[in-house]
Length: 240
Image (cartoon, rainbow, N blue to C red; front, side):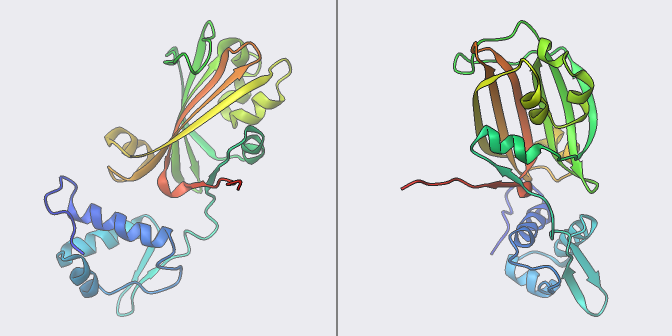
């Protein structure tokens, strides 16, 4: 297997992501020894320096543990890592987020207003926009932009800024969610997102857009969230 030599993405970055996916998908299981540098050089037709750079990056990410004279081993960093289950009902989403307390950073409020289509619903008079980054165990996994109708936001501004939003909206008196829509798109991290999540450029990502409307058809909540690809799991019940 050869890396894409004509690509603008450095070879070691390409190799790092191939190796990362083998760990994430448990083709290389926790505690096992990965192929030697020479074996990886032959498999991917790259130099020793490229392999060492990839191993060094995965070591810094806590996924590999090199041992002189013994080889390189997969750590148990993936064990117990919480993945986001992309549910297909609002009730399931609310229950999944209820009690979840990731570390929130880069919390900023702006006056930006969302771009709505006719399919989204009727616009509120004004929205409050929040930008924040979610992390767990020191690892950043999601960058989020949230728009909440201003009158809804003003009912619980502190909670909405510092906790998971969906359970708060679900329990908020006088707020009735009548319709909800969610879409998911596979993408990759651009330079800005890579800096936010502290991952290499072009790391696989999943972009989720979620829209909630009240009984009048007014859009009261929009979230545009981008997750690291290894934090996303999609399950659907396929009825016969």
